[in-house]
Amino acid sequence: MPPKTIKKALADALEDLRQQDFDNFRHQLLDRREEPRVRRNRVEGKTRYEVVDVLVSTFTESGALTVAVELLKEIDCNEDAERLVEETSGLSSKPGSSDTAGPSAGAPGANTTADGGCTDEHFVDKHRLQLTKRVSNIAPILDGLLDKKVIDQGRYDAIWAVPVSQDKMRALYSTCLKASTACKDIFYKLLEENEPYLIADLKK
Figure 1: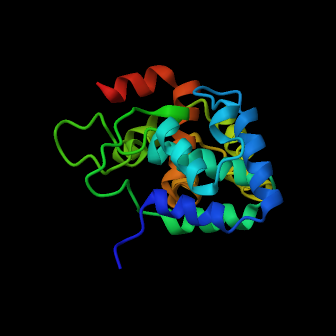
Figure 2 (figure 1 turned 60 degrees about the vertical axis):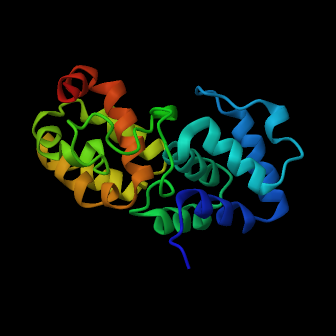
């Protein structure tokens, strides 16, 4: 049996949803205010596999995973979201695919700024040491992770109680950032929003 790809995992996740939950998923997808947005005629009346195709063509596979996890949590299908995260941990796009449409919806996917080396290492992993040392605007990042349900209230409170920013970052890396690429994508987007000069410097 060939290894599961992100696209196959997305299809399986939507296939497991009840019809009402699938309808809610499509509605939430249409209600997203972040770019790129999905037009109604692309998902209305479509099958689950067709919706997966729309997700991947709009956001790329890594971005589609991030969006799908967010939407599943928004419609209270938390177990499905967690299962999807677990099943896709360590996965990349299908072999031979050119997931090169760029970081849609804040998802960098694989590190495309690498200097000719392996591009499978995520940006937040490649620059872990520098991010741990240099991220200082940690409060809005934690707020964003809580809002996106990457961390729960208990984890948020525990990390917030740590007095030093570097130790807060180490706590993030040892917990939620080990979960999946989707969590790292959300973290990366929050870094871009709250530490733009640092991220720009690391990309050089």
